[in-house]
Image (cartoon, rainbow, N blue to C red):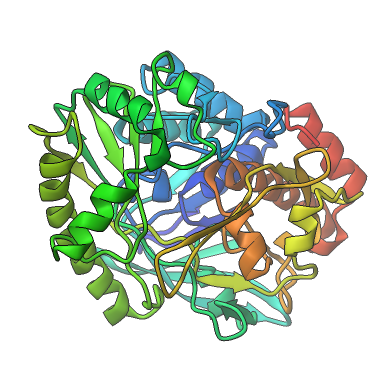
Length: 453
């Protein structure tokens, strides 16, 4: 990395967004000997996993239990486990997928920072991209808002791992928000409570099985270290009828934490808002905390084991499931996911079902992955239209509204990130033209780094 006196800098590869995908991408590119600058708007890494407390991670395995994601994502999980920040991959007691991976967001922040710095990644925190400088279909530099004013970063290849596809949008790449008149998926504000007597909760669940998601693994609730719970339908309907909660959702969803007595609540829902509209986003933050307050009262009054619970931590920001979906050289479809399709140019796998939270109302739609239980994400999904030296990573890749309901989750995002970082590094031998990367060479390098293709 080269720096000037006015804080401008230059590197081989510039990444915007230090979330699950961005960190994996930056590590992969740095390991291939390229200079990398990772830009992040917060003062820590992790994206929705840490800033929005979205957890547990899902999923590294097919429904039959076959692991399909390894490489850098698995290295991060291993380091989390050794640092006391995760129990590794455990059974999903709700039954949506085979496994999920619980973690402590604060420890994940430390693990990701350590992993990125060991790889040689240069990190610029507290910075927002607001402009791209282009010439002849190539990005030459990006401009950032920072505490010290505007900073310009020059690069040869760029990776947009911003979640919202900011770099691509500022570069004139076409995109969609929602689909066929349907708004993007609703936002959720996640929080953690403590002092929960989970044994009481489990005992109630086991004696009222009709009150919970029909695929719940009831026989595993008492002996799985971290459990997920989806249901409490009658309590929820009663509270809604009495006007005690005003949240457009049909059930309670929470996961016990890796520490005794802690529970992560994923029940708030903010609908009919555009996360790219600053006024909508501001309202969503306010509405999320309002819903948090009513849920605390609800849990204490209705849910066995939660009578004396208290707020431990609230997310830094509301969790965004969907915003811009960039138009790429190929668009991942619902059929690709539901049929479990394979592609000769696949660079990562996904195994999570299509999970659509109703953008207008209360319900959830789940569609399982077909075939062998996983699907390939083709490399062209990472290549945006109209730009020669830009790659996408994370939930802003080229996918339909439904397909994004599967590929947006953290394990898949990390796998996509590793592929994007590797491809960016390889493209430097092709003058940064990402479409010229050899697919066999890319797949071979990913396999050498432990990825499963």
